[in-house]
Image (cartoon, rainbow, N blue to C red; front, side, top):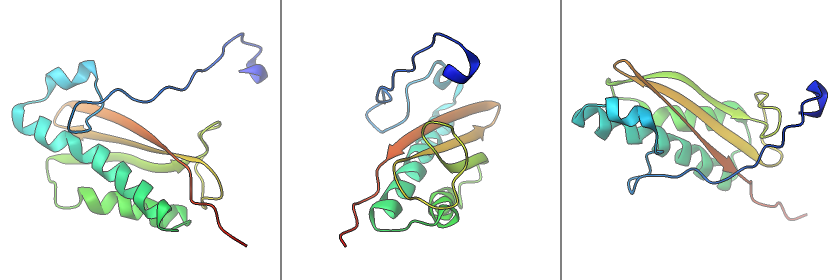
Length: 126
């Protein structure tokens, strides 16, 4: 946070997850049993975006569409956002050219869940 003159260092660590992939969060206790079942779709959508990137999809909107398709047909979920962003600035990206962070937020009833996934695209051989 040099630009704000704050002596802050951000340390990136993997998200701690339940066995089914749901990010551990204090908010999870507010989910009904059915809501808990639907909640894992957020992580599955991020993984779908990561899989698309690993297959060579480099268009940001196409990656977002891959994530959204996973949640299509899940009426219990309301998507707040799905985004492909720069991992340092969190600015949305129109193209994947290097490491990105996939971000998502959904609502299940009154509960809002967020998650993210860092993804490194495959190297292109010249």
